[in-house]
Image (cartoon, rainbow, N blue to C red; front, side):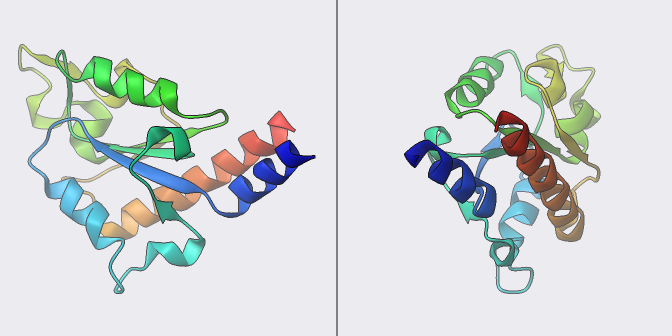
Length: 147
């Protein structure tokens, strides 16, 4: 009984965690802009958390490199199932302008599965919010499938 309550409450009020793999911080600034009263992403019932054990959706910005890929995987593994991942910006999607660097692995999907890709360099807050809404839809579908 309590387990079904948790699943229902998670579907209604998703918690999001943001992790920056290493970037110019352009996308990070735009992610933070989504939390301001101008864009107010919290109107969708989203809560920004700092602990992966409480997160339902992981927002990832920046290029994945050999030093942070283990951290990214560890954060992903600590999140409870079901979960969704949103890669934000050119660096998060493909490695961006750094993709040919010797220490860059590439985009987020080289390390963990990605549900939504948000384009841009930097990604605009409107695009991030659209990506989050799509990600929440995919998360809700995963919750429903989990049953």
